[in-house]
Each structure stands twice: as structure tokens, then as C-alpha cells.
Length: 523
Image (cartoon, rainbow, N blue to C red; front, side, top):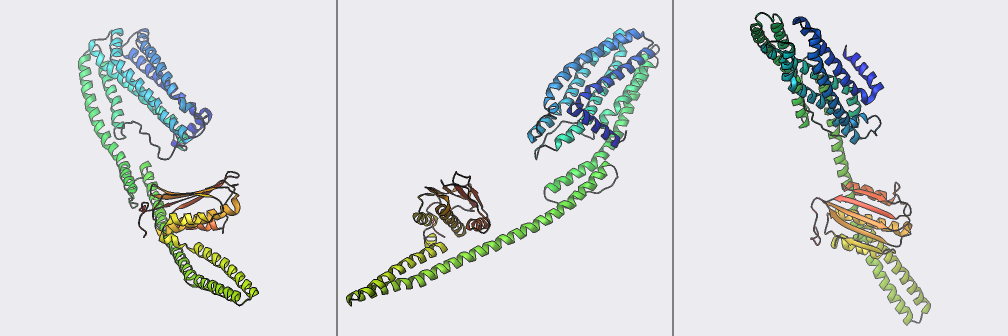
């Protein structure tokens, strides 16, 4: 049966039976066991000219013993396979897939335990059959070898059937396994499997020919010669098979070494395609995978470079904008603000002069102008502080935020547990707090708010919370949306949690390379 036909048959069985397809393993084992029983029993009756009923007694008793042991082993395996058999009805979660995959090793463990028990009983089996069939003492060794070979063949058939019938179930389960799942299943290395299996039938055949060729005449001699010839043949075949097995495994080792180089970052680790068998196909697809990985790595490198360039550009823009804010704030403070203060003094003098000259209407006009100028001067100072507060540069983040909250119409509880931070980080946090408190005053209908700033695992964390109506968001083009871009440019994240009726929380986290302790000196 070719691979395509076998796959279709397995797919058909799995579609009909689901995980219960594994129940066919004991059925297959029973058929193989009955076949071995029939061949050995009929061959023994024919070659030894023994009574068929005696042969049936000799081999049938052991068949019953093996059946009883098999029933116990299958009952235990059925319990171990509970997660597997529940796979069809269970939720297809990664955890359930992992449990199912781990449980899939139980059938082969059961088959291995079963075979070990049978092989352990073979000396007793060979001796009892020798006695029942009334054979000489030298009949025990070849009978033992025959029994071991027969039991080993049945165990091998069970393991092979388990592997084959598991395949469609494994394909189904593997698609749901969690990332990075590993389960190391104990198996004989590929290079040793043919070496272990091939000599068994050769040695068994040589011993059977030697023993049963002429039992009545020279049986011991024939057994010795046959055993010697069998050992020589087995040694030769084992050597040839071992060499050939190494040749089969060598390309796989090359693929493994290339995969290790790829894991270390060497994407040039291609492997030669020297055959058209499965290993050649695997090597071909491995090289195609490397081509795709190299293209993705080039694209990733380009994207990283572009992202770094974009971030640097945004940093330059923000730095330039902050510098321009400081320049405008200084010009307002040193220029327009000082002139307005001087004009306020002049109006005071004018008011006093008008009063001395008994010009009350002029004095009243001067007083009104002075009060209006006082309001304009306060607005100009607020504008200057909004551009960039001087206290942020001179004293740091905590005094600047306390000065900001003192002007808030909503009571604000402040807890700032950080010292001096890099200038871009301080500016970003200040403006986030400023915008958040402005939104609290305008939209939240809150009675209280809190501002918390601290450092956790190298990140400075800001949290502004109010007890207002909630339901806030940051539409494109809003002040908070622009601040989110600024936080992102600083390498941080901004998140707004605002369920309706439960207040609003603005959270910011920005990484700081070297946190400055509280009370640290300004830069």
C-alpha cells in the first residue's frame, strides 16, 4: 500500500472513529498473536511429528496466559488514555492538547511493558513446551530463542501499529498545542532500529533449521552448527545494516547541525540536496525556509532601521518644540510680561495723579484699566506656564505638579515618589498631568482626583484617577491623543481606562535607563 493510500485509509478511520482509533491497537495485536500462534503450532506439529492436541495444549495454555496479561495491560492503558479519548468532546484548548499529547505515549508504554513481561516468561515457556512435547534438554535453547523472537515480533508489531494509528490523532492535536511545547519521548535511535530488528528472523530461521532438520539424528550437533552459522550471518548482516543505517541518519544529522546554526543566527546555513528521497525533500524545504527567513530578516532589519529613524525624527521634533516653548516662555516673561508690569505701575501713577488733580472720572478710568491689565497679566502668566513652567526646570517634577494641582478647581491628592528624571520624561509627564486635570475639570464632573508617580522595575509610572462620570476617550486630534504620540516617542505607553459611571484613570509608563533617587540633583 503506497503512502497516499495509507494516509487516506487512516483519515477515513479517524473520521469514523475519532480518538477511539487507538482501540484498534489491541485488535491488531490479537491478530498478530494468533498468526504467530498458528504458524509456530502448525510448524511444531509438522516438524516434530507431534500429536496436534499435545501441541495445542503446549501453545494454547501460553496463549491464554498472554491473553490474561494483555487484558490487564489494556485496562490500565484504557485508564491512562482517558484524556486522549475525551479529545473529541473536550474544548480544543492548548492545555487540553498538551495533556492529550502527553497521554499518547501511554499505548506504547503499555506495549513495551507487555512485551517485557512476555519475554521474562519465555524461559518458563520454553521449558514447559520442551517437557510437554517430550523433547531432549538441548531443545530448550532454540525454543527459548524462538519464543523471544516471536514475542519481540509481536511487541514490534504493537508499537508500529500504535505509531501508525496515532498519526491522524497527532496531526489533529499538534494544531492546538501551546507555543514552545516540548515532550521528549524515549525511542531507540534511528540508526539502531534496523540493527536491532533485522538479525532476529535470521537467527531464528537458522536455529529452527538446525533443530528441526533432523531431531532424531545428531540434534545437538545440528543445533550447534546452525547456531554458529546463524551468529556469523547475524553479525555480518548487523554490520551491513549498521553502516547503511548510518548513511540514512547522516543527512538528518546535517539538518540538525544546520538548524542549530540557524538558531544561533546564521541564516546562511543551507544544506546540500543530494537525493530525491524523504531526506532530500526535507533538505529542499529547509533551504526554501532559509530563503524566506533571510528575506524576512532583511525586511525586519529595514523596518527596525526605519523605526529608529522615525523615533529619532520624533525625538528631534519634540526636543525642538520644547526648546521653542522655553524660548517663547522666556520672551513672554522677559518681554511682554515685564512691559505689562511697567504699564500697570504707570496706570497706578496716573490714577494717583488724577486723584490729586481732583479728576475722579479719570482716576476711575485709570483704576479700571489697571484691573483689566492685572487680569491680562494673570492670563499671560498662565499662558507662559502652559508653554513650559519655569519651576519644572528649576525644581523638578514634584513641585511643578503640586503647583499645577493648586490651581485645579477639583481637589487633587498628589503622591510623587521620584526625583529628577531626564528632561523629556519630566516634560511628557507634566503635560499628561496638565491635560488630564484639565479634562477632569471640564468634562468629568468629579469631586476628587489623585496623581501618583513612582518607579517600578526601571519604569516611571504615572496614574491620574478621578471619581467622575467616566466614558472618556481620546479622539484623533485631541490633546490627549497628541500626548499619546509624545509618550510613544519617549518609548512609553499611555492607556485610558474609563468605564461609564466609574471614573477615569490615565496610566503612563515610560522606561528610564538610570532612575534618579528622590532629591537627586537636577541635570
